[in-house]
Image 1 (tube, rainbow, N blue to C red):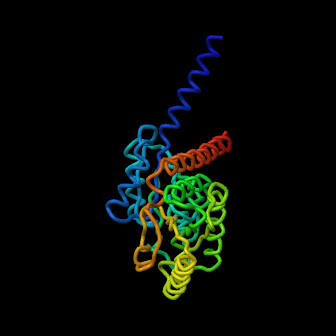
Image 2: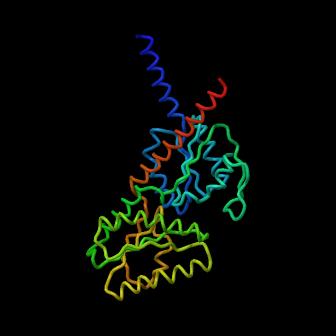
Image 3: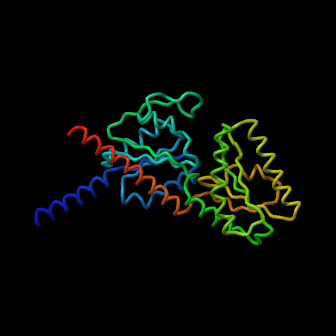
Length: 288
């Protein structure tokens, strides 16, 4: 019995030790000092539980390598990469290539030239984005209800960045609309609408701006107030310029600050860590 109990204790201690040695590498777009600080704050409470390092810069191999080396210096023996992007499709292929999880570099436009990183520990990569997280629906509901004064005379407009590819943009809009369903259920608004600005794509952005502006004007003419909620990680982005001169209500809050983003990061870390553990178990079995 004593040997059995000792075995259980060793297993528990070993499990706790292995958990503490899986580092969290958080990828984020990066922005102003205030933007970056919001991301830093979102993982502040996680640092007591695991090594944490942040790589800003849209899959920049330089910041990825720096963050990876930092985790190793903190004692991480493996790394769970969590991609804090609105869309799970953003920078996925180049990131997988950099971490040697894909054999070939992606073709086409990339923000940074992909290169293979110097890996000294096993790495696993999350694939989902904030658009896939039902937790974000609760944030949208809170933003809408917090700005509302008379729901029956208000229309909600959720606006996201949006990609250049038309099919991918349709997936963005579909997922945003799915999350917006919670506002339709919890509120009594005249309408709840979603759209993207296609911000970085000449031609597509201009058309999106005209459509968004026309919607706000139409609602105003009908005597309704448009509440604009940015589906962005932080801040209001370029929307103040887009809607300049139009009547609307907004508080400029993105998804951060909110504890639910931290909860999502932790859940992504845990599932990605589980992938690492399973992979290590399979490797051990293949060598037995």
